[in-house]
Each structure stands twice: as structure tokens, then as C-alpha cells.
Amino acid sequence: MKTQASPEPLAARAEALPRPEEGKPVPYLWRAYVRPTAGRLALGAASAALAGIAALLIPQVLRRVIDDLGSHPSVSVLLVGVGLMTLLGLIEGAMYLARRQFTIKPAVAIERAMREDLYARLQRLPAGFHDAWSSGQLLSRSMSDLSLVRRYLAFGGVMTVSSAILIAVGLVMMYLLDWRFFLLYAVIVVPMALASFAFRTRFNRASRRVMDLQGDLATTVEESVQGIRVLKAFGRADFTARQLVQQLAGLRKAELYKASTLGWFIGLITAVPALTMAAALIGGIVLVARDQMTPGTLVAYFATAAVLTNPLQDMGQLIGMFVSTKAALQRHIEIMGVERDIRSPESPARPASEGRLELHDVGFRYPDAKPDSEPLLTGVSLSLRPGETMALVGETGSGKSTLLNLIPRLYEAGEGRVLVDGADVRELDTDDLRTRIAVAFEDATLFSDTVENNVLLGVRDQDPQARRAALEEALEVAQAHFVERLPEGAQTQIGEEGLSLSGGQRQRLALARVVAAKPRIMLLDDPLSALDVSTEERVIEGLGRVLADTTTLIVAHRPSTVALADRVALLEDGTVTAVGPHHELLESNEHYRHVIASLDSQDTLEDVLDDDACRDAEQHGREGR
Ligand SMILES: Nc1ncnc2c1ncn2[C@@H]1O[C@H](COP(=O)(O)OP(=O)(O)OP(=O)(O)O)[C@@H](O)[C@H]1O
Ligand SMILES: [Mg+2]
View: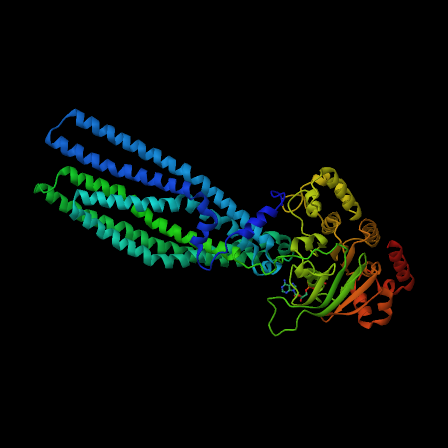
């Protein structure tokens, strides 16, 4: 929210990305991100290969110099040789630099694009997705996994290509020096290539496990930091500490397994060439003594082998890196590939914005509910006239918040129809639907940003004057006078990185956010619970004034809130059993009396049943309209 003034283009781009096919991370990376910068990356690989080839030419010069000096020693041969070797060294250095120049930029750009796309996708996923995925997993996927991808693109991939070229060229040069020695060397490369193949799958599984465990760890740490007060208050700081220790032990085991898998591989890759070289040295000395090989050739062979040692060993690391990156990419794709089960239709309906809200026989169960259990909501029918305020009342856990979530399609109603302005919400463009509706959720979530940006979240008008007016009005209606007393007023940073606000203060800002968005339909999930009764009355009065023709569905936990609504709907056993003005329901409905009486211990039963108070309130509601 801080960085993205208008997220639409970003979201649209994320939508347009190719669909990752199951289990094919590399082609996906190529099609979605790498192809546009492939030229630069290829140049990077070419530079790296050139650097390697320059290094491989040095032994050739060395051979000539040694052999020439052996037959007819002269200063000029020495000078030319040294000069050539210096030049080759310089070329190697320059190419090394060029490789970095070519690859860093595209790699960083790709990492950034992937992060943005991931974020945009996360914003568009159905709310049900976030129930199933922990925030730590998402965090580790968007941060560490993607930097792994960047490192591979900037370094690993390019080095793999250039090392492969280097090894091939080196082998040709060895063949030209002496075919027997070439054979000896080739015998090492083959088993190592085979070893790396067998090694891939094992290492893949090990690194995938380490990453998953890291994600879980991030979740635990995040939760214990966020919930530190609760844990302290209950004296249970040691509880998460113990959980953390257990997770760390698991992670350690997985890391050790991964490291030992890698250790075996590196051991093999180092020991086998060393033994082969020892054999070659003995054979070479015999051949030179019998005059079947020049000393220069022997030196050049070993110099070439020395140049190849690093790329060969790197190959092992690079394979490890490739496998980890592939696992990281797989995890990334798992999120990018989640189907949006809530989509906008191709040709959406565009009914006039009146603020009509109807529910017909709506039924719903959470995707993770027990399959044989009763649905949470069944046959819920409601009809709100434009401008009407309806309170939704029910026992705790009866599904009030869930019902509200169905209206802006945060969850999809399983049965029945939700109509906004006469159109089924499934026929409306989701963005359009969510501009008609504004929701104040139960937990007043604020972002780490200024008060102003938090309140104006739903305001699309960019004109500074209009924004200031909207802000002032919204704060006034929400009775958020405390903002004036904050250190920097509406510019004060709040949220996790800023000033902490009280629960009631946060609630009022969340309410102000809804007011500022000027919706036609307002869904309020118990937004006034932290206010005292007289402030609550002022808020409702302000809402009635500013959003006079806004339709409001308000979940109420207090008799005072209920009394201010035009009508009340009673949610009972998963369905709406009664709708009517507060005092009528009080008289006629036993369950309603029971719920109202149990709603709030602050308001005594006498207050609730005080007929005069009820009638006053109702009068007030009518005048307000
Ligand atoms: N994301 C979810 N996934 C699965 N089940 C859920 C989810 N959210 C809520 N539930 C379950 O659905 C039921 C209704 O929850 P809901 O939050 O709608 O109740 P509520 O009427 O708003 O309660 P309260 O008055 O306490 O706010 C609860 O039993 C709850 O366990
Ligand atoms: Mg609720």
C-alpha cells in the first residue's frame, strides 16, 4: 500500500502471466521472466566462457615457451610468452567483470518483478486461500525463495553454462595435447556427471524440506512476536520457546542431512580427480624420460587440469544451487498457480448503483469444514431497501461475520444468490462490486502507514483538496477526535512500525475508512463495540447524515446499537428466523429476548426492556431517515 499508488496495472500483469504447468518450474521461469532479458544473460554467459577460454590458453602459451626455451633459449621467446600470458590474464579479468555487469541487472529486475507479481496475486486470491496458508510461509516464499532465484540467475545459471563450455573446451585442448591423458581425464568427468545425476533427486527433497521448515519457523516467530503480550500475560512465554526449540531441532536435522548429502558429493568430486592426477603425473614423468612427450606438454596438461579443477568442483555446487532454486521456484509456482476460484465474469453486469441488497436462500460451509457436518448457513434470505439500516443479531459463532463476507464475495456462497442492486454478485465485476460495498471488519486491521493513508484506503480520487475534505469528514463521523492529539495529527505513522493505538481507536479509524470510501452499501461488523453509548449515538447520527442513502448491514453486539437500526434480523441455527423492528421482536420472539439479554453485560436487562427507551430510539431512527 505504501509503494503502490494504483495496484491495478500490477494486478493485471499478474493475471496475464502464463499459467504455471504442474511441476515445470524452469519453463515457467523462462516464459514469464527470463525470455525478455535472455540476451543480456547470454552475453553474461559468453563473457564467463571467454574468461575461461582465456585462462585455458595460458597453459598453451606456457607449453610453447617451455619447449622453445628447451630447444633454443632466447630472451625474446620469454618476453613474448610473458607478454601473451599477461594479456590473457587481463582478458580473463575484464571478461569476469563484464559477466557481472551483464547479469546483475536482469537478475535483480526479475526478482523484483516476481515479488510484485506474487504480491499482486496474493491480493487477488480468495479469502479461503489465506485460511490455508500461514503468513510465515508466504513471507519466506516472497523473500528468501525469490532471492535464491535471483542468485541463480545472476550467478548460478550463467556459471553453469560457462563452466560447461569451459570443461568442453578444456577437454578438446587436452585431447590435442595427448589423447591418452585426455582419456584418463575423461574417465573422471563421466563418473562425476553420473554421480551428480543420482544426487539431484536426493538433494532436491532435502532442500525442499529445509525450506518448508524455515517457513514454519518464520510463522512461529512471527506469531510469538505478535502475540508476545498474550503469552507474557498468561506466563506462557516458555510455551512458544519450547515449540521453537523443537522446530529448530527439526530444522537442524534437516540441514545436517542436506549438508551431508552435499558433503558426500563434494568429497567424491575432489578425491577422484586428485587420485587421477597422481596417476597422470607418474605416467607423464615416465613418458618425458623416454622422450615420448615434451616437458612443455606435460606442464601444459597439468596447467590445463588446474584451470579445470575449479569449474569441475563448482559444477557440484552449481548443481546443488540449481536444485535448491528449482525447489524455491516450485514453491513460488504453488502460489502463482492457485486458481482464482472467485473471478470476474467476461461481460459483467453494470446495474445502476442504488444500494439494494438481497439474499435469497443463501447457504454456505467453509471449505475446511467437516464434510458430513451441517452447513454453517442455510436458506438465509434478507432484503434491504436502499438507505435502510439493518442490524444482524445472533449468538456468538452463529455465522454473522461469515454472512457479511459473502456479500463482497470474499467467500463464495455455496447455495442461493446474493444480489447487489438487483444483480447476482457473480455477474458483477469484483472490483466494481467492492467499490459499491465497504466493509469494516471485526478486527480493525491497520497498515504500517500514516493515519491519513489508512483512512483513505478506499478513496480513488487523487485530488489533494478532495482527499483532505474526505479525511476530515470521515474522522468527524467516526468520532476519531483523538487523531488531532497524535504527535503529527493525521500524518502520524501507526501500525506495526509506528504508534500503537488502542482497540477503540483502531476501530474508529476502520470505521472512518468505510465512511471515506462513500459506498452505497456498508457492512459493519460490530464496529462500535468499544465506544460508550453516547459516542455510539453520535457516530450513528453522523453516519445517517453523511451516508444518508447508504444501505447498512450492521452486526450488533449491543442493545443500544440494535435499537438504532430500522429493522433487526435474527440469525439462529444457521438461518434468519425473524426480521422486524427491535421492539416488535422483543415482544414476539422468545429467542430474540434471550439473545438480546445475553448480548452485553454492561447494558442491564432492565435497560433493554425499558419500553420508553426503545420507543425513543425508534423515533430517533425514523427522524434520522
Ligand atoms: N475461515 C474459517 N474457516 C473455517 N471455519 C470458520 C472460519 N471462520 C469462521 N469459522 C467458523 O464459522 C463459525 C461462524 O463464525 P463467524 O465468525 O461467522 O461467527 P460470528 O457470528 O461472527 O461470531 P462472533 O459473534 O463471535 O463474531 C464459527 O463456528 C467458526 O468456527
Ligand atoms: Mg463475528
